[in-house]
Length: 201
Ligand code: HEC
Image (cartoon, rainbow, N blue to C red; front, side, top):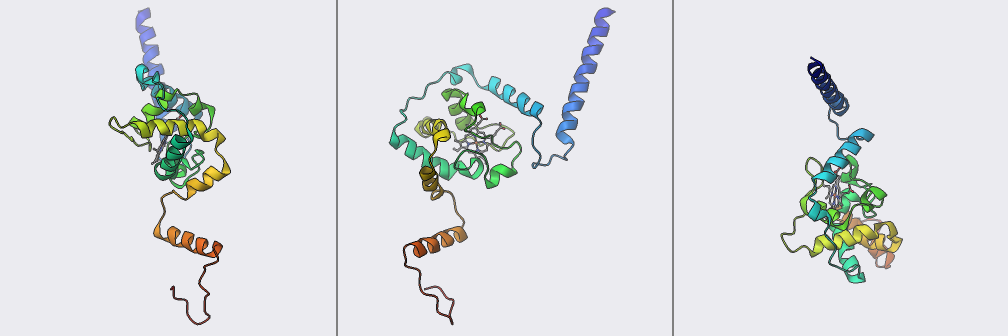
């Protein structure tokens, strides 16, 4: 009898929890513009941390943080990752702002606390049910290890490095044209605009 009522209590608490989580997930009509609640974020982080195999978490980065490796990773990040994570890792980027869950600020402790193996595993495998894709390198894993070096470097990223990265961000044809005009202007080679014609040379 006693056992029966404890079981009932557990079932009621469990159903209550599911209803509360579902209500918190659905109250915004599944819009990607919402911010996850603190509880949702905490649950997702813990579930995800546990889902990474422990031998993967224990892997060490085989590459040194040399200037060359960091430069490769910076340009790779600018080209493949910054569209969601932003060049500085803040997540304040066109796609990043519109995703749910949003990319976390990679400079903060929550990410920096992760082991090298964990960061590598996330880059290689992606995160299911989120915008984070898998960048599986199928054994040619130097690129992912270099990216791990760069994530460690992010809190110390200089303004000069950021500027260099912005040249490697994917661009639309209009952006490229604008950039070319800026370059021409800065180099003093802007063609003189005549009053009568606005055609380009
Ligand atoms: C299309 C968008 C998108 C792209 C492109 C992308 N990411 Fe992500 N990334 C995300 C999102 C969203 C998350 C958060 C996932 C979650 O909530 O669990 C994330 C999470 C991460 C994390 C885990 C951070 C943490 O501590 O929670 C790392 C590391 C990461 N991304 C690295 C990269 C790297 C390196 C690249 C490029 C090779 C990249 N991402 C490209 C969207 C993206």
